[in-house]
Length: 123
Image: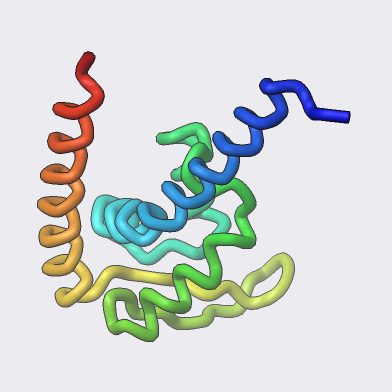
């Protein structure tokens, strides 16, 4: 029995959204931390993404942590742990000077890519 065409398009859309998100989450996380002006912990970052973008790019909050760790390992973010009055200790993240420079470069690349894709899709 063959699945309806709608199921096929849903599958393709979900795959495309996942691939698109994988390529943009790092950019968005750097931008959020650059705009924050103060260190934020993961839940605060997730809430800002949810507020500003409806959570479209991130999906599950737990998906943020591996990206934050990768950005820290690449020296684009600094992090430190502070005890929490209610619950486990919290890891705070802040953008580094290198992270700000990379953010500017990635923003330029994003804008160029967006303009190119928009020019192709304009019809």
